[in-house]
Length: 444
Image 1 (cartoon, rainbow, N blue to C red):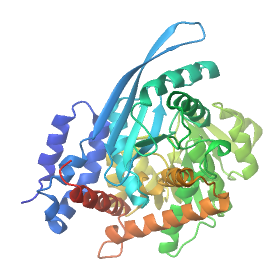
Image 2 (spheres, one colour; image 1 turned 45 degrees about the horizontal axis):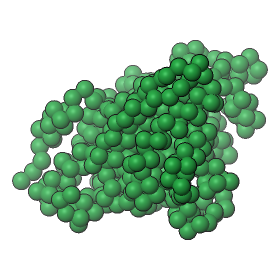
Image 3 (cartoon, rainbow, N blue to C red; image 1 turned 60 degrees about the vertical axis):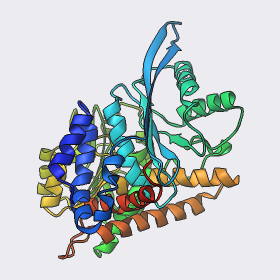
């Protein structure tokens, strides 16, 4: 008995029509898993582990009605995808953005299962959010929306059941409003959300965790290949938390960071950013063009992405499918040797094939950007024992987790010729732990 790849993907497509992001995520993973299962773990075939893993344990969809500042009723849709709880309570962020739909959240939840497994922490995978757009809304409108959203979500989450966090559009402000409403309705103070303020149950290093963890992973890749970050030219997309702290850590490690971007355009600084320049960027908001007006070494490229510039390392930290096949080929032409994903699935399937074909060292998001959920997991641990660890202790634990993720990727992704296929290593390494737990717990 064996699993046929084409038949499996066809059935997933039939079961999940009009969900391209979810199908893309599943296809990318099972391309590696099906050959591995057929050759090494045939015991998992009759258990239908893979078939069960691509089906969410639960999908919740609900109406979110709220009043805007004009006292007019607005209606949005809320979701929570509880994908897999075999190794722990569901864990994954909430995304507030106008393009949020079930396909995107299912892809994110599916990826989260493997990512959380790779951290070795006891957390399952989930994701949620709403098609609400916080941009242009007042604080009062965001508070009212968050309170309405949590009034329904609180029925489905808990510190031992499902622990959401932030994601795109959900930062410390939104987490605060969500937590306050949960506490109000449940009448208890528990670690039901992560990304909380450090004054009220949050963890140090949480804002920095994804960006810092990304660089710790890249550092492991370089160390493994007898190289260092010193003097490397790094191109980064995005201008939010992940991109900012990835740039900060890259600079601290001796690299030259030349780009940051948002949906409106890209800043290119031929001399590289400094920590002072990064601080200036943080205060610009959406108008990155002001940077080029202040610094003569920089140019602003409206409606363009960062992948046109020569670099050694590319770190996509913006959103899904931002690197196309053409972008990938341009990166290789310009000398890029490492691509590590700070965002979730920022490379298209065609781009990934280009990386693999040209032996690019490719760190997929489920491995490279796992630092965020790792520190969220550490926040859960601190909440459970009623302690708050120092930033130094959390940072040390983060480094160890990223080092162990790299070791797992090498263990399952190393070819006979010595090349490390980090994507295959992450897919198989993340799968094994969840599969064993599902097998042990029976058909549930």
